[in-house]
Length: 364
Image 1 (cartoon, helix red, strand yellow):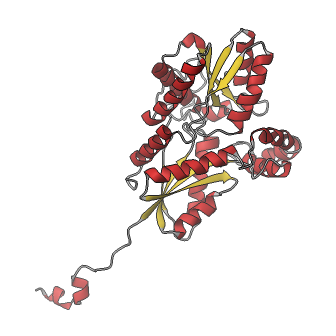
Image 2 (cartoon, one colour):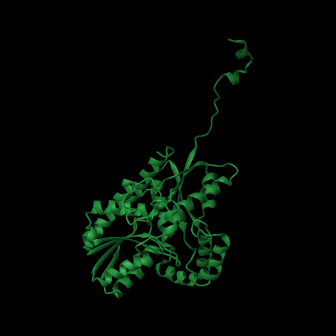
Image 3 (cartoon, helix red, strand yellow):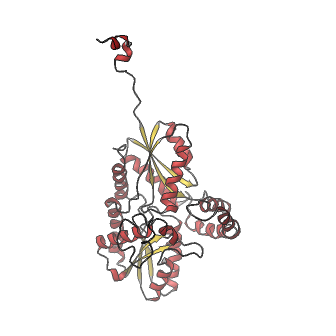
């Protein structure tokens, strides 16, 4: 034994029997949120939180405040509350109920982890769920934004919110964020199966693939070179380096994949975008205009699929399922049938578990 080794205490020369406790992994499913109730006050509170996000209304703070307080909040909450009441059940918000059920079922497929649901705006909140997971020993956090496509106002906003909350803890957890899964075969298979079932039963004349919309500038800002996005009519015809983060390009790529897997006739299939707000240009074509045009064209059986939503909510159930169906018939169309979102379909729960495993070495 060398002189240096002889001077070391025995405990220092031998491996310690104590070691770091095995790290537990928490999985946080995150969505934008929902009001606590369809009451006007709760809807106003939710809209104020949501629309105050600079990734949602990306404008100077003063201009955003003026728009909110003088234009949007005095009028929109009552209208939105009326819409929420049409889809609200005794058990609560559809988005919350589907999200909680998804977390419960995903837990069964990932028993080695702790799965929770959180909303960026609303309850259960991101801070409360992060703290709850830490309290039961989860030092690793896998974040799953429940948005198939990347948009700064959805995926980017929730991801940033989780990282900011995690960073404010004295002991900062290790965080991984699952990337957008629009091109994951498990997601595409789940949507394909859901649509195929309805096509067999309904036999539509036309299929509308409707996605949530975003302002055009949100897409342009993802193009770092500034020479591709929305610079030509064919800018979204394929995914290239310049548009790899472009929401519109990812949506059209999803449509192409679904059309191929379902054997849809391009002449009887349309991709469009819904839920625009204000007078600024949003990505086109607009879903409400397409629905009206199809009604005027005499389409009798219109099937609507919404691949950008994995859980049914106000935008699917009320905007398309109720208002869209009314507008379609008023324009001269026949029946509009909405394919339910994936919600907790077993093929989707299994697929999401596979997506999480593939994106994180912490999950087995």
